[in-house]
Image (cartoon, rainbow, N blue to C red; front, side, top):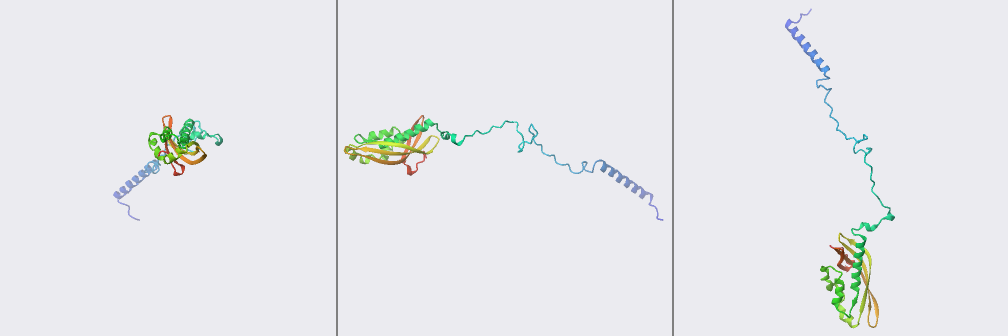
Length: 221
């Protein structure tokens, strides 16, 4: 039979058992040494709720605001003039100015003075462009010859299209013609198509530039 443990050793064993039992009781009573059954789960972010319980921004969320559908217009009912930055009256006035300038360009009374001819166009042009009209006109080169023939030319013009426009300018494509009558004959001269840019000065439109349409004039630039 083995010798029993010394009394001192027995005392240490007994104290150790008590410590182990107390520790086990504390562990199970608190759900573990962490106090909460492991690491605490992170809190879920708060989600704002609509009045009817739907998540804000979710596809199936219900809105408390009445919808406001964008008004649309059927293709046949579209007023294309509303797409321009000018009212219809301004478009007509600007086009009329471009047409009148092309008519003045083709209207020449060779029995008068070149200055009178240029003045008819200057009256429709900006101050800046009026200064260069005499240089750009076709009339001066053969004025004397036509004056001897007592020639009088009547200009005619028609606006064909709007090429481009800006906040205060519109470039029209205009077809021009000149019908000339002399003492012994009459003939037509097709002057061709011109790009005529008009700019707005207050409630008035003035010609800012005038040149053949194929040059590609694009407004104020």
